[in-house]
Image (cartoon, rainbow, N blue to C red; front, side, top):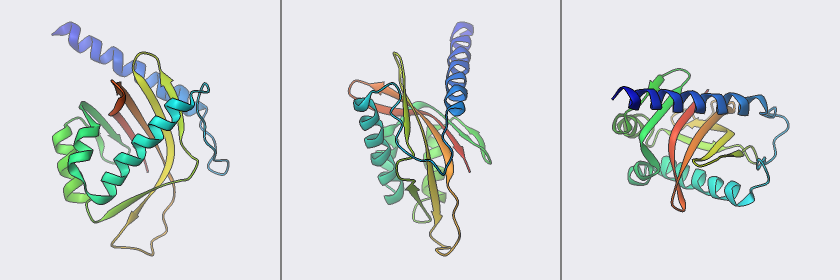
Length: 164
């Protein structure tokens, strides 16, 4: 049990280090453009496609698809809400607080994708969340980071850092 906890801590530290290094290369908002990371266009295309699948489900309240894309060992870091580690509770919160109330809009050409050898990829980008109850509200772009774990030919979300 002790080794398992130590391995999880080491894995989390590694992921945080990768995220930190990735943030150092993050482009300013006024200079968007796709960043493939090491020239892997197949990986970039796969992650952009998964982002689209996930957030189409998010915007349409397709909880089944969202559940399938989230890994069982999910960690969701929100700058205002803190850390959530229960996939079930995260999905319940999304259904209760987001469905029909909030829509996500990706900032075009803002996605950067970097491979994580033997694991998957890091996605960094900008998006906006529109409150459907306040359609005239001014919405500013915010950064997000998603860690994708490759499983066979698909990917699952294992970590999310949402910065509003």
